[in-house]
Image 1 (cartoon, rainbow, N blue to C red):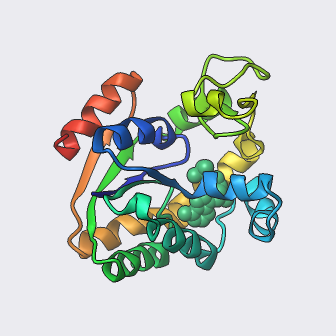
Image 2 (cartoon, helix red, strand yellow):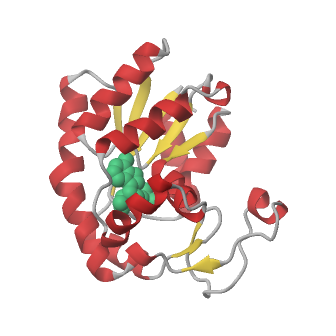
Length: 218
Ligand code: AMP
């Protein structure tokens, strides 16, 4: 089953993605993490995306569609995927549909994380992120070590840092980009008959997971 997690930056998609992926038994495709990994590895794609990401602007659709196609074509993704932070524009939504059709699959559902802007600002201003696996943390101190099992068991394990695009100016740009380019995707999905489920994304992490699972019938 392919699920798109949809919502503003900081809505909790990155926190819920591993929980929902585990419940579904499928891997995650997170384009933000794919771009950060490309940057850490110093690839041309990562280096070209850096300036856009630091400002909070969206990276070009053809770059994102390349990541989507390459990832979903891998055998590990045959059973489906949880898409975190993809899709963010109408061309990406149309491109994802085409990739899925070419692979003989279809979209299972779009899960919308509903959350007001003031909650986003307060969440992101206290958010730290693992510099290796991008896992999000709150109530922690920069420099502490990541506790995600796969990260810790890898060489070295990650360290918690503040993401450059979590500063207030970049967050404002990211919310503007969401309103201008990402929100219209929802209308596109409505017009195209996708299954859309909206959940209240404010509250305790476990409660939100429960709402998400209920909405997806898991
Ligand atoms: P995220 O980790 O999902 O918050 O993404 C971090 C940054 O990566 C975004 O602010 C964008 O600059 C870029 N990015 C990630 N996913 C996408 C996407 N689907 N479309 C365009 N830009 C993206």
